[in-house]
Image (cartoon, rainbow, N blue to C red; front, top):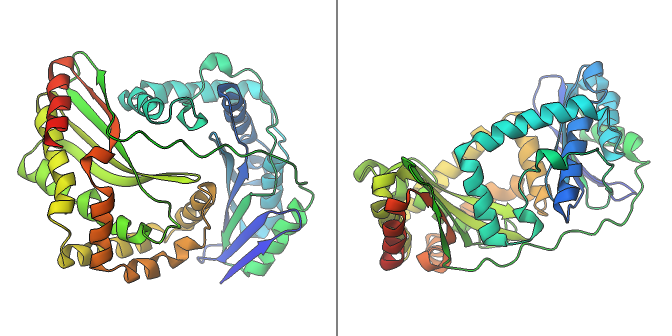
Length: 397
């Protein structure tokens, strides 16, 4: 059972009866656009402060995260304390932070760990290469930018609250309405959609002495709401979305070029991209890129077979049911769609949409979206192997 309700202030509440354990799981996605790096730093620090509010004192787990578009609050608590749970969400909506000192120290420690990961700078360069100065290219703030938390302007208009619990959805929605009715609408200008990505632009990132090369590619795709998305989803699974996919069989099992290779969708509000990523040893950078380009081209010259489509459909349907069985996963998936400006209820309709995708539509999607020359991105590798790798990519395309 689902209750889909829009409160008078504009907040959308999706309440879902789910599970048997007497716990309530909630996600609040609220608009908090960050047009500058300074605004993002304020929002990230505010989220860290809000995470240490009164929720822990009342036996609940609260975590607040920030990106350039939203603040996202996740709270889990006993179903019998439903009003306390919604009050914790109200603290986030109204921007009531706790002290900044300890929260700032913990945040800096987490940022240092994240920056130490070798993939961090690669992804930062990828975002700058694709999106230039658009806010979606902003990465984690620097320590010096984390001055003081400021209440970021947010509004119930455009915000979505997802609540899952083994209870009457109407009662869940009523509890949210009682607590959040006082959240007043205000004008919060949204960020513009990400710019169109220049196709066919591969940026070399020299990494002297690196034993491993990282390939990070993005190609234009469609959003979840697009009627072509289910067919493209199946095509992406056939290419690299499972252990039996073409990329895994060719680049990993047959040739032994890669440690890992995958395809997935990289969605932003108003825009969708198809991601192809691989990690390979330095000396196999060139052959791996050549084989990757060949498999992308092969999705057009050797269209997906009926057997591949059915296998991809079965895998997607089964993995979706398993992955979204826990309440926190389902709540997160619904909220994630809301954060990408997509109707969350499309998630519940996705199995039907997948079932309706025909082999012909999957072939059409592969023909339209999988040309290697449509993809841009970065290749981080030792300079001794980088030039050869990039040149072989362009030659093979």
